Length: 330
Image (cartoon, rainbow, N blue to C red; front, side):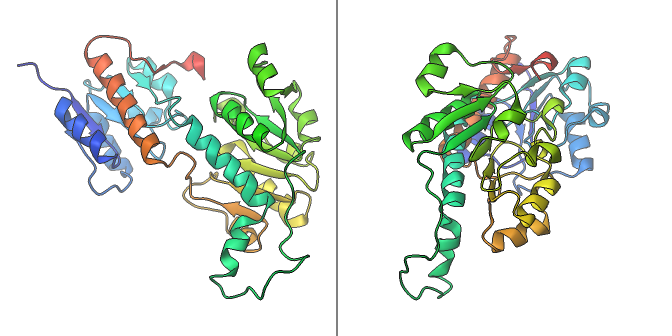
């Protein structure tokens, strides 16, 4: 009987996914669902034939140097791979895969929800009644901002950016975008989207800016202090991509000073730590902070797990995994 590959999973996954993994492979699960320590990750790469990490696991070159000879596949449970040194992995003959596409609709839903929450002060309003602070309706109280007719600038017009644009059009927003290149003419026409080659020029003209690009070395602090200062004082910024894309310290200062009206953030530079100044702004109603919930649906997590299984099965069977990631793609 052929020996089953050892698959080490670093976090709890949906039960149906874990069950199938155990049926197919010699699977080692993390039943406590606590992030593995560096020492535990080191032991995992030493014994695993396949490692299934998540975005909270830093799989860098130093860790990969400790890998045992059996480790040939890193099947990331996540859309991005910024937690993995893909170049170092490939140099060691280790294939890397991810789970693209399955989180598109969920993340676009949450991005639209954050836009609405910031513009219409939804989280502030949701606290009033439980806190016993509502004394009745008033014509000038808790006034937000209408989003219909406003300009939305999307930074990164991939699957999620396009899904957001479709939702935003239904709310009457005008769609603008900055991307490495134009999207297909058919999609641009369908979305009635305006392309900006210059991110600086787009930022200066938008009422709402949404970050939907991947985190790569090229996009680290893409929205730098200089670029954030280009935004209009009444503009709002939403980020459901990665915290590192925005200079979080600069954004905080600009919101505190009134140079930017507000923000909706689902991701942070130092997750799970959140800047205390951002927390203070949230209590003041100037920002909405969510605990990285953008893709958190049961359907999405199961679909991610299914992709992980398909990638592992294809690799073990001698085929090229469908979601292989190469350094040239980053």
